[in-house]
Length: 297
Ligand code: C2E
Ligand code: MG
Ligand code: MG
Ligand code: MG
Image 1 (tube, rainbow, N blue to C red):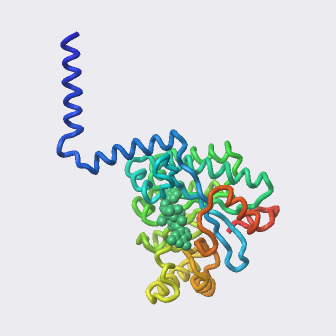
Image 2: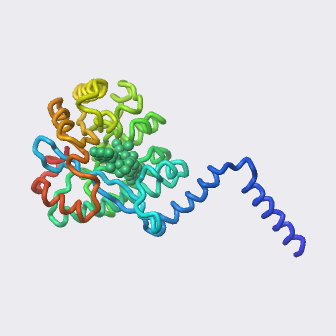
Image 3: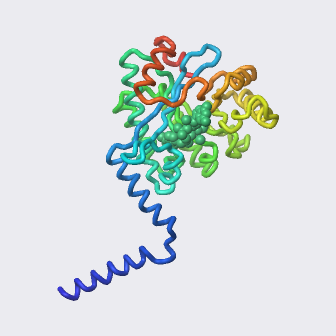
Protein backbone atom coordinates (compact mmCIF):
# COMPACT_ATOMS: atom_id res chain seq x y z
CA UNK A 1 0.00 0.00 0.00
CA UNK A 2 2.76 2.36 1.02
CA UNK A 3 4.47 1.67 -2.26
CA UNK A 4 1.47 2.32 -4.35
CA UNK A 5 0.76 5.53 -2.44
CA UNK A 6 4.27 6.60 -3.12
CA UNK A 7 3.94 5.82 -6.78
CA UNK A 8 0.78 7.86 -6.88
CA UNK A 9 2.51 10.80 -5.24
CA UNK A 10 5.34 10.45 -7.69
CA UNK A 11 2.93 10.33 -10.59
CA UNK A 12 1.10 13.37 -9.35
CA UNK A 13 4.41 15.06 -8.76
CA UNK A 14 5.40 14.35 -12.31
CA UNK A 15 2.07 15.63 -13.60
CA UNK A 16 2.43 18.77 -11.55
CA UNK A 17 5.95 19.18 -12.73
CA UNK A 18 4.82 18.86 -16.34
CA UNK A 19 1.98 21.24 -15.74
CA UNK A 20 4.28 24.01 -14.56
CA UNK A 21 7.27 23.12 -16.71
CA UNK A 22 8.92 25.90 -18.62
CA UNK A 23 7.72 24.72 -22.02
CA UNK A 24 4.22 25.54 -20.84
CA UNK A 25 3.86 29.19 -21.69
CA UNK A 26 1.77 31.65 -19.72
CA UNK A 27 -0.54 31.79 -22.67
CA UNK A 28 -1.21 28.05 -22.49
CA UNK A 29 -1.92 28.28 -18.80
CA UNK A 30 -4.27 31.18 -19.30
CA UNK A 31 -5.95 29.20 -22.05
CA UNK A 32 -6.61 26.30 -19.68
CA UNK A 33 -8.08 28.62 -17.05
CA UNK A 34 -10.19 30.48 -19.58
CA UNK A 35 -11.42 27.22 -21.04
CA UNK A 36 -12.53 26.09 -17.58
CA UNK A 37 -14.31 29.45 -17.13
CA UNK A 38 -16.07 29.15 -20.46
CA UNK A 39 -17.16 25.60 -19.73
CA UNK A 40 -18.56 26.75 -16.39
CA UNK A 41 -20.29 29.70 -18.00
CA UNK A 42 -22.14 27.28 -20.25
CA UNK A 43 -23.12 25.06 -17.30
CA UNK A 44 -24.19 28.04 -15.20
CA UNK A 45 -26.23 29.56 -18.01
CA UNK A 46 -24.25 32.79 -18.11
CA UNK A 47 -24.57 33.32 -21.85
CA UNK A 48 -27.33 35.45 -23.28
CA UNK A 49 -28.47 36.21 -26.78
CA UNK A 50 -28.96 39.64 -28.30
CA UNK A 51 -30.73 40.11 -31.62
CA UNK A 52 -29.84 42.67 -34.25
CA UNK A 53 -32.52 43.71 -36.75
CA UNK A 54 -31.97 43.35 -40.49
CA UNK A 55 -33.98 45.88 -42.48
CA UNK A 56 -35.20 46.33 -46.02
CA UNK A 57 -34.05 49.94 -46.39
CA UNK A 58 -36.47 50.51 -49.28
CA UNK A 59 -39.54 49.78 -47.19
CA UNK A 60 -38.04 50.38 -43.75
CA UNK A 61 -39.48 47.04 -42.63
CA UNK A 62 -37.81 44.38 -40.54
CA UNK A 63 -36.92 41.32 -42.63
CA UNK A 64 -34.86 39.35 -40.16
CA UNK A 65 -32.60 39.32 -37.15
CA UNK A 66 -29.20 37.94 -36.26
CA UNK A 67 -28.57 36.18 -32.96
CA UNK A 68 -25.40 37.46 -31.27
CA UNK A 69 -24.06 35.89 -28.11
CA UNK A 70 -22.80 37.77 -25.03
CA UNK A 71 -21.37 36.49 -21.77
CA UNK A 72 -23.07 37.85 -18.69
CA UNK A 73 -20.13 37.51 -16.31
CA UNK A 74 -21.10 37.68 -12.61
CA UNK A 75 -18.18 40.04 -11.82
CA UNK A 76 -17.02 41.49 -15.12
CA UNK A 77 -20.46 42.26 -16.53
CA UNK A 78 -21.38 41.88 -20.20
CA UNK A 79 -18.48 40.44 -22.24
CA UNK A 80 -18.66 40.81 -26.05
CA UNK A 81 -18.18 37.74 -28.27
CA UNK A 82 -14.88 38.93 -29.74
CA UNK A 83 -13.37 38.43 -26.26
CA UNK A 84 -14.25 34.72 -25.96
CA UNK A 85 -15.31 33.28 -29.34
CA UNK A 86 -11.70 32.92 -30.59
CA UNK A 87 -10.82 30.91 -27.47
CA UNK A 88 -13.99 28.86 -27.80
CA UNK A 89 -12.90 28.06 -31.36
CA UNK A 90 -9.41 27.06 -30.24
CA UNK A 91 -10.70 24.73 -27.55
CA UNK A 92 -13.63 23.26 -29.47
CA UNK A 93 -16.10 24.66 -26.94
CA UNK A 94 -17.59 26.68 -29.76
CA UNK A 95 -19.57 23.59 -30.77
CA UNK A 96 -21.66 23.28 -27.57
CA UNK A 97 -21.84 27.08 -27.36
CA UNK A 98 -23.17 27.47 -30.91
CA UNK A 99 -25.58 24.61 -30.35
CA UNK A 100 -26.85 26.34 -27.21
CA UNK A 101 -27.33 29.60 -29.16
CA UNK A 102 -29.12 27.81 -31.97
CA UNK A 103 -31.54 26.14 -29.61
CA UNK A 104 -32.32 29.25 -27.52
CA UNK A 105 -32.71 31.47 -30.57
CA UNK A 106 -35.01 28.99 -32.31
CA UNK A 107 -37.15 28.60 -29.19
CA UNK A 108 -37.43 32.39 -28.98
CA UNK A 109 -38.39 32.84 -32.60
CA UNK A 110 -40.95 30.04 -32.42
CA UNK A 111 -42.46 31.79 -29.37
CA UNK A 112 -42.72 35.05 -31.29
CA UNK A 113 -44.44 33.32 -34.21
CA UNK A 114 -46.84 31.66 -31.74
CA UNK A 115 -47.65 35.11 -30.38
CA UNK A 116 -48.55 36.21 -33.91
CA UNK A 117 -45.42 38.30 -34.37
CA UNK A 118 -43.23 38.21 -37.44
CA UNK A 119 -39.51 38.36 -36.63
CA UNK A 120 -38.52 37.43 -40.21
CA UNK A 121 -35.56 35.21 -40.96
CA UNK A 122 -33.47 34.16 -37.93
CA UNK A 123 -29.79 34.29 -38.76
CA UNK A 124 -27.46 32.02 -36.77
CA UNK A 125 -23.66 32.13 -36.74
CA UNK A 126 -21.91 28.85 -37.24
CA UNK A 127 -18.28 27.96 -36.66
CA UNK A 128 -16.45 25.87 -39.25
CA UNK A 129 -15.73 23.28 -36.54
CA UNK A 130 -19.33 22.17 -37.07
CA UNK A 131 -18.41 21.33 -40.64
CA UNK A 132 -16.18 18.52 -39.46
CA UNK A 133 -17.55 15.03 -39.00
CA UNK A 134 -21.14 13.99 -39.43
CA UNK A 135 -22.81 15.33 -36.31
CA UNK A 136 -24.17 18.66 -37.46
CA UNK A 137 -26.92 17.47 -39.81
CA UNK A 138 -28.58 15.08 -37.30
CA UNK A 139 -28.18 17.78 -34.65
CA UNK A 140 -29.93 20.46 -36.67
CA UNK A 141 -32.66 18.07 -37.87
CA UNK A 142 -33.44 17.03 -34.29
CA UNK A 143 -33.38 20.64 -33.14
CA UNK A 144 -35.80 21.80 -35.82
CA UNK A 145 -38.17 19.00 -34.81
CA UNK A 146 -37.89 19.44 -31.05
CA UNK A 147 -38.33 23.22 -31.19
CA UNK A 148 -41.07 23.08 -33.83
CA UNK A 149 -39.05 25.45 -35.96
CA UNK A 150 -39.71 25.72 -39.68
CA UNK A 151 -36.39 25.43 -41.58
CA UNK A 152 -37.60 28.27 -43.80
CA UNK A 153 -37.41 30.58 -40.78
CA UNK A 154 -33.68 29.95 -40.43
CA UNK A 155 -30.53 31.27 -42.04
CA UNK A 156 -27.06 30.00 -41.16
CA UNK A 157 -24.08 32.32 -41.54
CA UNK A 158 -20.54 31.13 -41.89
CA UNK A 159 -17.58 33.35 -42.58
CA UNK A 160 -15.79 33.26 -45.88
CA UNK A 161 -12.44 32.53 -44.22
CA UNK A 162 -13.92 29.62 -42.25
CA UNK A 163 -15.32 28.06 -45.43
CA UNK A 164 -12.00 28.48 -47.20
CA UNK A 165 -10.17 26.48 -44.49
CA UNK A 166 -11.81 23.30 -45.74
CA UNK A 167 -13.80 24.09 -48.88
CA UNK A 168 -14.55 20.48 -49.81
CA UNK A 169 -15.97 19.57 -46.40
CA UNK A 170 -17.84 22.85 -46.31
CA UNK A 171 -19.49 22.27 -49.67
CA UNK A 172 -20.64 18.79 -48.68
CA UNK A 173 -22.18 19.79 -45.33
CA UNK A 174 -23.60 23.08 -46.60
CA UNK A 175 -25.33 21.18 -49.42
CA UNK A 176 -27.05 19.04 -46.81
CA UNK A 177 -28.00 22.08 -44.72
CA UNK A 178 -29.43 23.75 -47.80
CA UNK A 179 -31.40 20.60 -48.69
CA UNK A 180 -33.19 20.93 -45.34
CA UNK A 181 -34.63 24.24 -46.55
CA UNK A 182 -32.32 26.44 -44.50
CA UNK A 183 -30.97 29.63 -46.11
CA UNK A 184 -27.18 29.99 -46.23
CA UNK A 185 -25.19 33.21 -46.08
CA UNK A 186 -21.49 33.98 -46.23
CA UNK A 187 -20.56 36.29 -43.36
CA UNK A 188 -17.85 38.98 -43.50
CA UNK A 189 -17.72 38.67 -47.26
CA UNK A 190 -14.72 40.24 -48.96
CA UNK A 191 -12.23 39.37 -46.24
CA UNK A 192 -11.68 35.66 -46.90
CA UNK A 193 -10.12 35.36 -50.37
CA UNK A 194 -12.54 32.90 -51.92
CA UNK A 195 -12.15 32.40 -55.62
CA UNK A 196 -15.06 32.89 -57.98
CA UNK A 197 -14.99 29.23 -58.98
CA UNK A 198 -15.24 28.16 -55.34
CA UNK A 199 -18.00 30.64 -54.70
CA UNK A 200 -19.95 29.27 -57.64
CA UNK A 201 -19.85 25.77 -56.19
CA UNK A 202 -21.18 26.76 -52.78
CA UNK A 203 -24.92 26.27 -52.19
CA UNK A 204 -25.28 29.77 -50.76
CA UNK A 205 -28.13 32.24 -51.12
CA UNK A 206 -26.65 35.39 -49.72
CA UNK A 207 -23.52 37.44 -49.09
CA UNK A 208 -23.03 39.73 -46.14
CA UNK A 209 -20.71 42.61 -47.09
CA UNK A 210 -18.18 42.98 -44.32
CA UNK A 211 -18.47 46.02 -42.08
CA UNK A 212 -14.90 47.09 -42.85
CA UNK A 213 -15.94 48.05 -46.42
CA UNK A 214 -19.03 49.94 -45.27
CA UNK A 215 -17.33 51.94 -42.54
CA UNK A 216 -15.73 54.61 -44.74
CA UNK A 217 -18.52 54.84 -47.33
CA UNK A 218 -19.18 56.98 -49.27
CA UNK A 219 -15.86 58.88 -48.99
CA UNK A 220 -13.14 56.24 -49.25
CA UNK A 221 -12.54 55.53 -52.94
CA UNK A 222 -11.25 52.02 -52.39
CA UNK A 223 -14.21 51.03 -50.24
CA UNK A 224 -16.57 52.54 -52.81
CA UNK A 225 -14.90 50.41 -55.51
CA UNK A 226 -14.91 47.25 -53.36
CA UNK A 227 -18.52 47.51 -52.30
CA UNK A 228 -19.63 48.23 -55.87
CA UNK A 229 -17.64 45.18 -57.02
CA UNK A 230 -19.23 42.94 -54.37
CA UNK A 231 -22.71 44.17 -55.34
CA UNK A 232 -21.96 43.45 -59.02
CA UNK A 233 -20.60 40.02 -58.12
CA UNK A 234 -23.74 39.16 -56.15
CA UNK A 235 -25.91 40.22 -59.11
CA UNK A 236 -23.87 38.06 -61.48
CA UNK A 237 -24.08 35.00 -59.24
CA UNK A 238 -27.74 35.69 -58.43
CA UNK A 239 -27.11 36.08 -54.70
CA UNK A 240 -28.94 38.33 -52.27
CA UNK A 241 -26.96 40.86 -50.30
CA UNK A 242 -26.91 42.27 -46.80
CA UNK A 243 -24.58 45.11 -45.86
CA UNK A 244 -23.22 45.01 -42.34
CA UNK A 245 -22.35 47.96 -40.17
CA UNK A 246 -24.19 50.89 -41.75
CA UNK A 247 -24.28 53.65 -39.15
CA UNK A 248 -25.17 56.75 -41.15
CA UNK A 249 -27.88 57.79 -43.59
CA UNK A 250 -25.13 58.47 -46.16
CA UNK A 251 -24.00 54.86 -45.94
CA UNK A 252 -27.57 53.59 -46.21
CA UNK A 253 -28.25 55.82 -49.23
CA UNK A 254 -25.04 54.80 -50.97
CA UNK A 255 -25.84 51.11 -50.49
CA UNK A 256 -29.42 51.49 -51.68
CA UNK A 257 -28.44 53.59 -54.69
CA UNK A 258 -26.04 50.87 -55.73
CA UNK A 259 -28.49 48.00 -55.35
CA UNK A 260 -28.06 46.69 -51.81
CA UNK A 261 -31.37 47.04 -49.99
CA UNK A 262 -30.89 44.79 -46.97
CA UNK A 263 -29.00 46.43 -44.18
CA UNK A 264 -27.88 45.46 -40.70
CA UNK A 265 -26.29 48.25 -38.73
CA UNK A 266 -26.50 50.74 -35.92
CA UNK A 267 -28.32 53.18 -38.23
CA UNK A 268 -31.39 50.96 -37.81
CA UNK A 269 -30.55 49.35 -34.48
CA UNK A 270 -27.81 47.99 -32.28
CA UNK A 271 -28.16 44.37 -31.14
CA UNK A 272 -31.01 44.26 -28.61
CA UNK A 273 -31.83 42.06 -25.63
CA UNK A 274 -34.89 39.83 -26.01
CA UNK A 275 -37.49 42.23 -24.55
CA UNK A 276 -36.40 45.20 -26.63
CA UNK A 277 -36.22 43.03 -29.73
CA UNK A 278 -39.83 42.03 -29.16
CA UNK A 279 -40.83 45.71 -29.01
CA UNK A 280 -38.83 46.36 -32.15
CA UNK A 281 -40.65 43.54 -33.98
CA UNK A 282 -44.02 44.94 -32.94
CA UNK A 283 -43.07 48.40 -34.28
CA UNK A 284 -41.20 47.46 -37.44
CA UNK A 285 -42.25 44.06 -38.77
CA UNK A 286 -44.36 43.27 -41.75
CA UNK A 287 -47.75 41.74 -41.10
CA UNK A 288 -47.80 37.98 -40.74
CA UNK A 289 -48.58 36.65 -44.17
CA UNK A 290 -49.66 33.17 -45.05
CA UNK A 291 -46.66 32.00 -46.98
CA UNK A 292 -43.54 32.67 -44.96
CA UNK A 293 -41.50 32.42 -48.13
CA UNK A 294 -42.87 35.78 -49.22
CA UNK A 295 -41.04 37.64 -46.57
CA UNK A 296 -37.97 35.49 -46.32
CA UNK A 297 -35.29 37.53 -48.02
P1 C2E B 1 -20.73 39.05 -37.13
O1 C2E B 1 -21.44 37.76 -37.23
O2 C2E B 1 -20.15 39.63 -38.38
O3 C2E B 1 -21.78 40.04 -36.45
C1 C2E B 1 -21.88 41.39 -36.70
C2 C2E B 1 -21.14 42.19 -35.68
O4 C2E B 1 -21.07 43.54 -36.11
C3 C2E B 1 -21.85 42.23 -34.30
O5 C2E B 1 -20.85 42.36 -33.29
C4 C2E B 1 -22.63 43.53 -34.40
O6 C2E B 1 -22.93 44.11 -33.15
C5 C2E B 1 -21.64 44.39 -35.15
N1 C2E B 1 -22.30 45.51 -35.84
C6 C2E B 1 -23.44 45.47 -36.54
N2 C2E B 1 -23.75 46.67 -37.02
C7 C2E B 1 -22.78 47.51 -36.61
C8 C2E B 1 -22.54 48.92 -36.81
O7 C2E B 1 -23.30 49.64 -37.46
N3 C2E B 1 -21.41 49.44 -36.24
C9 C2E B 1 -20.55 48.68 -35.52
N4 C2E B 1 -19.48 49.29 -35.00
N5 C2E B 1 -20.75 47.36 -35.32
C10 C2E B 1 -21.85 46.78 -35.87
P2 C2E B 1 -20.84 41.39 -32.03
O8 C2E B 1 -22.22 41.12 -31.56
O9 C2E B 1 -19.84 41.96 -31.10
O10 C2E B 1 -20.28 40.04 -32.66
C11 C2E B 1 -18.98 39.96 -33.15
C12 C2E B 1 -18.74 38.63 -33.83
O11 C2E B 1 -18.77 37.56 -32.88
C13 C2E B 1 -19.78 38.26 -34.86
O12 C2E B 1 -19.53 38.94 -36.05
C14 C2E B 1 -19.56 36.76 -34.98
O13 C2E B 1 -18.44 36.51 -35.81
C15 C2E B 1 -19.18 36.39 -33.56
N6 C2E B 1 -20.37 35.82 -32.90
C16 C2E B 1 -21.36 36.45 -32.22
N7 C2E B 1 -22.27 35.55 -31.75
C17 C2E B 1 -21.85 34.33 -32.15
C18 C2E B 1 -22.35 32.98 -32.00
O14 C2E B 1 -23.39 32.73 -31.40
N8 C2E B 1 -21.61 31.98 -32.58
C19 C2E B 1 -20.44 32.22 -33.25
N9 C2E B 1 -19.79 31.18 -33.78
N10 C2E B 1 -19.96 33.46 -33.44
C20 C2E B 1 -20.65 34.50 -32.89
MG1 MG C 1 -22.74 36.93 -38.38
MG1 MG D 1 -20.18 39.77 -40.21
MG1 MG E 1 -17.35 39.33 -37.92
